[in-house]
Length: 253
Ligand code: PEP
Image (cartoon, rainbow, N blue to C red; front, side):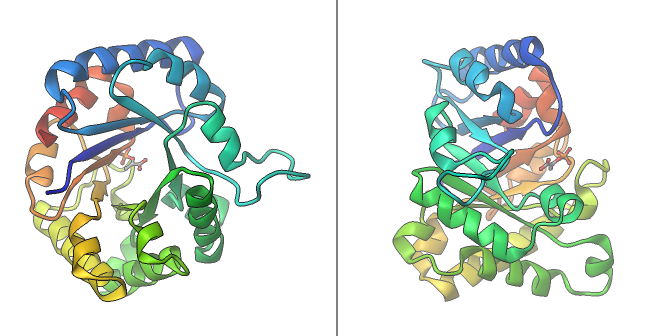
Protein backbone atom coordinates (compact mmCIF):
# COMPACT_ATOMS: atom_id res chain seq x y z
CA UNK A 1 0.00 0.00 0.00
CA UNK A 2 1.44 3.38 -0.99
CA UNK A 3 1.52 6.07 1.68
CA UNK A 4 0.07 9.34 0.34
CA UNK A 5 2.51 12.20 -0.07
CA UNK A 6 1.48 15.86 -0.13
CA UNK A 7 4.12 18.49 -0.87
CA UNK A 8 3.80 22.27 -0.94
CA UNK A 9 5.93 24.11 -3.50
CA UNK A 10 6.14 27.72 -2.35
CA UNK A 11 7.90 28.76 -5.58
CA UNK A 12 9.38 32.30 -5.31
CA UNK A 13 6.99 33.42 -2.57
CA UNK A 14 7.00 34.24 1.16
CA UNK A 15 9.55 35.99 3.36
CA UNK A 16 11.48 34.63 6.35
CA UNK A 17 8.89 35.55 8.97
CA UNK A 18 5.81 34.50 7.00
CA UNK A 19 7.51 31.28 5.90
CA UNK A 20 8.32 30.23 9.46
CA UNK A 21 4.80 31.08 10.64
CA UNK A 22 3.28 29.06 7.79
CA UNK A 23 5.59 26.10 8.47
CA UNK A 24 4.74 26.13 12.18
CA UNK A 25 1.01 26.28 11.45
CA UNK A 26 1.25 23.33 9.07
CA UNK A 27 3.42 21.30 11.43
CA UNK A 28 0.98 21.92 14.29
CA UNK A 29 -2.16 21.41 12.21
CA UNK A 30 -1.07 18.26 10.44
CA UNK A 31 -0.29 16.34 13.64
CA UNK A 32 -3.98 15.86 14.33
CA UNK A 33 -4.94 15.32 10.72
CA UNK A 34 -2.31 13.08 9.29
CA UNK A 35 -0.53 11.79 12.37
CA UNK A 36 1.97 9.90 10.24
CA UNK A 37 -0.55 8.48 7.76
CA UNK A 38 0.47 10.98 5.11
CA UNK A 39 3.98 12.14 4.22
CA UNK A 40 4.06 15.93 4.14
CA UNK A 41 6.84 18.15 2.78
CA UNK A 42 7.29 21.90 2.53
CA UNK A 43 9.37 23.19 -0.38
CA UNK A 44 10.36 26.80 0.29
CA UNK A 45 12.87 28.93 -1.61
CA UNK A 46 16.52 27.99 -0.92
CA UNK A 47 17.14 30.97 1.35
CA UNK A 48 14.41 29.94 3.78
CA UNK A 49 15.20 26.21 3.91
CA UNK A 50 17.13 26.32 7.14
CA UNK A 51 14.57 28.46 8.95
CA UNK A 52 11.69 26.29 7.75
CA UNK A 53 13.56 23.09 8.65
CA UNK A 54 14.08 24.45 12.20
CA UNK A 55 10.41 25.41 12.43
CA UNK A 56 9.25 21.87 11.66
CA UNK A 57 11.86 20.02 13.73
CA UNK A 58 10.21 17.43 15.93
CA UNK A 59 7.15 17.29 13.67
CA UNK A 60 6.59 14.73 10.93
CA UNK A 61 6.76 17.46 8.28
CA UNK A 62 9.78 17.18 5.99
CA UNK A 63 11.51 19.84 3.94
CA UNK A 64 12.44 19.82 0.27
CA UNK A 65 14.18 22.11 -2.21
CA UNK A 66 12.84 23.42 -5.49
CA UNK A 67 15.96 22.55 -7.47
CA UNK A 68 19.51 21.22 -7.16
CA UNK A 69 22.66 21.36 -9.24
CA UNK A 70 24.20 18.13 -10.49
CA UNK A 71 27.81 18.83 -9.53
CA UNK A 72 29.14 18.09 -6.04
CA UNK A 73 31.02 21.38 -5.58
CA UNK A 74 33.20 23.93 -7.31
CA UNK A 75 33.00 26.96 -9.57
CA UNK A 76 29.25 26.97 -10.28
CA UNK A 77 28.22 30.44 -9.16
CA UNK A 78 24.67 30.61 -7.92
CA UNK A 79 24.10 26.85 -7.83
CA UNK A 80 23.35 24.63 -4.82
CA UNK A 81 24.69 21.08 -4.38
CA UNK A 82 22.90 18.02 -2.99
CA UNK A 83 25.23 18.01 0.04
CA UNK A 84 24.31 21.62 0.83
CA UNK A 85 20.62 20.71 0.73
CA UNK A 86 21.21 17.77 3.08
CA UNK A 87 23.22 20.04 5.32
CA UNK A 88 20.27 22.38 5.87
CA UNK A 89 17.80 19.60 6.54
CA UNK A 90 16.30 18.73 3.15
CA UNK A 91 14.93 15.28 2.48
CA UNK A 92 13.35 15.91 -0.94
CA UNK A 93 14.14 17.91 -4.07
CA UNK A 94 12.04 18.80 -7.11
CA UNK A 95 13.68 17.87 -10.41
CA UNK A 96 12.32 19.21 -13.67
CA UNK A 97 9.43 21.29 -12.36
CA UNK A 98 7.56 22.71 -15.36
CA UNK A 99 8.73 26.24 -14.54
CA UNK A 100 12.34 25.04 -14.68
CA UNK A 101 11.67 23.25 -17.95
CA UNK A 102 9.59 25.94 -19.67
CA UNK A 103 10.69 29.23 -18.06
CA UNK A 104 14.36 28.49 -17.30
CA UNK A 105 14.85 26.09 -20.23
CA UNK A 106 16.01 22.85 -18.58
CA UNK A 107 15.90 19.81 -20.84
CA UNK A 108 15.46 16.12 -20.03
CA UNK A 109 19.22 15.51 -20.00
CA UNK A 110 19.77 18.11 -17.26
CA UNK A 111 16.78 16.86 -15.32
CA UNK A 112 18.20 13.33 -15.47
CA UNK A 113 21.58 14.53 -14.17
CA UNK A 114 19.80 16.25 -11.29
CA UNK A 115 17.84 13.09 -10.44
CA UNK A 116 21.10 11.11 -10.33
CA UNK A 117 22.88 13.78 -8.29
CA UNK A 118 20.00 13.97 -5.82
CA UNK A 119 19.99 10.21 -5.22
CA UNK A 120 23.79 10.07 -5.00
CA UNK A 121 23.58 12.82 -2.40
CA UNK A 122 21.00 10.99 -0.30
CA UNK A 123 18.01 13.11 -1.34
CA UNK A 124 14.63 11.85 -2.58
CA UNK A 125 13.85 13.38 -5.99
CA UNK A 126 10.37 14.36 -7.08
CA UNK A 127 10.55 14.06 -10.86
CA UNK A 128 8.00 16.42 -12.40
CA UNK A 129 6.49 15.62 -15.79
CA UNK A 130 3.57 16.95 -17.79
CA UNK A 131 2.36 18.10 -21.16
CA UNK A 132 1.64 21.57 -22.52
CA UNK A 133 -1.93 22.46 -23.51
CA UNK A 134 -0.98 22.33 -27.21
CA UNK A 135 0.49 18.85 -26.71
CA UNK A 136 -2.68 17.61 -25.02
CA UNK A 137 -4.82 19.07 -27.80
CA UNK A 138 -2.59 17.36 -30.37
CA UNK A 139 -3.11 14.00 -28.62
CA UNK A 140 0.54 13.84 -27.53
CA UNK A 141 0.07 13.63 -23.75
CA UNK A 142 1.23 10.02 -23.40
CA UNK A 143 4.16 10.50 -25.78
CA UNK A 144 5.39 13.60 -23.93
CA UNK A 145 4.97 12.09 -20.47
CA UNK A 146 6.56 8.84 -21.58
CA UNK A 147 9.64 10.63 -22.92
CA UNK A 148 10.00 12.73 -19.76
CA UNK A 149 9.66 9.70 -17.47
CA UNK A 150 12.05 7.53 -19.51
CA UNK A 151 14.67 10.25 -19.86
CA UNK A 152 14.24 11.39 -16.27
CA UNK A 153 14.85 7.88 -14.91
CA UNK A 154 17.51 6.93 -17.50
CA UNK A 155 20.48 5.09 -16.03
CA UNK A 156 18.83 4.35 -12.67
CA UNK A 157 18.66 0.73 -11.59
CA UNK A 158 15.54 -0.44 -9.73
CA UNK A 159 17.03 0.12 -6.29
CA UNK A 160 17.84 3.75 -7.06
CA UNK A 161 14.62 4.38 -8.97
CA UNK A 162 12.75 3.35 -5.82
CA UNK A 163 13.88 6.65 -4.27
CA UNK A 164 11.91 8.63 -6.86
CA UNK A 165 8.42 10.11 -6.57
CA UNK A 166 6.89 11.16 -9.88
CA UNK A 167 4.67 14.26 -10.00
CA UNK A 168 2.33 14.41 -12.97
CA UNK A 169 1.61 18.08 -13.53
CA UNK A 170 -0.11 19.05 -16.77
CA UNK A 171 1.49 22.40 -17.57
CA UNK A 172 -1.86 23.92 -18.58
CA UNK A 173 -3.18 23.26 -15.07
CA UNK A 174 -0.29 24.79 -13.10
CA UNK A 175 -1.17 28.11 -11.53
CA UNK A 176 -4.04 28.60 -13.96
CA UNK A 177 -7.01 27.53 -11.87
CA UNK A 178 -7.67 24.83 -14.49
CA UNK A 179 -7.50 21.31 -13.13
CA UNK A 180 -7.38 18.02 -14.94
CA UNK A 181 -10.57 16.13 -14.25
CA UNK A 182 -10.07 13.25 -11.81
CA UNK A 183 -10.49 10.85 -14.77
CA UNK A 184 -7.98 12.71 -16.98
CA UNK A 185 -5.47 12.67 -14.14
CA UNK A 186 -6.14 9.02 -13.25
CA UNK A 187 -5.64 7.97 -16.88
CA UNK A 188 -2.19 9.55 -17.05
CA UNK A 189 -1.22 8.24 -13.61
CA UNK A 190 -2.19 4.71 -14.64
CA UNK A 191 -0.19 5.18 -17.85
CA UNK A 192 2.88 6.28 -15.84
CA UNK A 193 2.57 3.29 -13.52
CA UNK A 194 2.35 0.89 -16.46
CA UNK A 195 5.38 2.56 -17.99
CA UNK A 196 7.38 2.15 -14.76
CA UNK A 197 6.35 -1.53 -14.72
CA UNK A 198 7.70 -1.93 -18.25
CA UNK A 199 10.92 -0.06 -17.45
CA UNK A 200 11.46 -1.92 -14.16
CA UNK A 201 8.91 -4.35 -12.75
CA UNK A 202 5.42 -4.55 -11.29
CA UNK A 203 6.70 -4.41 -7.73
CA UNK A 204 8.49 -1.11 -8.20
CA UNK A 205 5.57 0.31 -10.20
CA UNK A 206 3.19 -0.71 -7.43
CA UNK A 207 5.34 0.97 -4.78
CA UNK A 208 6.22 4.18 -6.62
CA UNK A 209 4.22 7.23 -5.59
CA UNK A 210 2.78 9.39 -8.35
CA UNK A 211 1.52 12.77 -7.18
CA UNK A 212 -0.87 14.97 -9.12
CA UNK A 213 -0.19 18.70 -9.43
CA UNK A 214 -2.05 21.53 -11.09
CA UNK A 215 -4.33 23.96 -9.22
CA UNK A 216 -5.04 21.47 -6.44
CA UNK A 217 -6.97 23.02 -3.54
CA UNK A 218 -8.94 21.86 -0.53
CA UNK A 219 -12.16 21.80 -2.55
CA UNK A 220 -10.97 19.60 -5.43
CA UNK A 221 -8.34 17.44 -3.69
CA UNK A 222 -10.79 14.87 -2.29
CA UNK A 223 -11.92 13.66 -5.69
CA UNK A 224 -8.46 13.82 -7.25
CA UNK A 225 -6.72 12.02 -4.39
CA UNK A 226 -9.53 9.46 -4.32
CA UNK A 227 -8.38 8.06 -7.68
CA UNK A 228 -6.63 4.69 -7.40
CA UNK A 229 -3.34 5.75 -8.99
CA UNK A 230 -3.10 9.24 -7.47
CA UNK A 231 -0.91 9.03 -4.39
CA UNK A 232 -0.98 12.60 -3.19
CA UNK A 233 -0.45 16.08 -4.52
CA UNK A 234 2.24 18.56 -5.42
CA UNK A 235 0.62 21.87 -4.53
CA UNK A 236 1.67 25.37 -5.52
CA UNK A 237 -0.62 28.32 -4.78
CA UNK A 238 -2.80 26.53 -2.21
CA UNK A 239 0.27 25.55 -0.17
CA UNK A 240 0.77 29.20 0.81
CA UNK A 241 -2.35 29.16 2.99
CA UNK A 242 -2.20 26.95 6.07
CA UNK A 243 -5.89 26.04 6.22
CA UNK A 244 -6.08 25.31 2.50
CA UNK A 245 -2.97 23.12 2.59
CA UNK A 246 -4.15 21.33 5.73
CA UNK A 247 -7.45 20.67 3.95
CA UNK A 248 -5.55 18.97 1.13
CA UNK A 249 -3.56 16.88 3.61
CA UNK A 250 -6.85 15.87 5.26
CA UNK A 251 -8.24 14.63 1.98
CA UNK A 252 -5.19 12.39 1.51
CA UNK A 253 -5.81 10.44 4.75
C1 PEP B 1 3.22 23.49 -8.71
O1 PEP B 1 3.87 24.47 -8.42
O2 PEP B 1 3.80 22.42 -8.85
C2 PEP B 1 1.78 23.61 -8.89
C3 PEP B 1 1.09 22.54 -9.18
O3 PEP B 1 1.23 24.88 -8.75
P1 PEP B 1 -0.35 25.21 -8.56
O4 PEP B 1 -0.86 24.28 -7.49
O5 PEP B 1 -0.37 26.64 -8.14
O6 PEP B 1 -1.00 24.96 -9.88
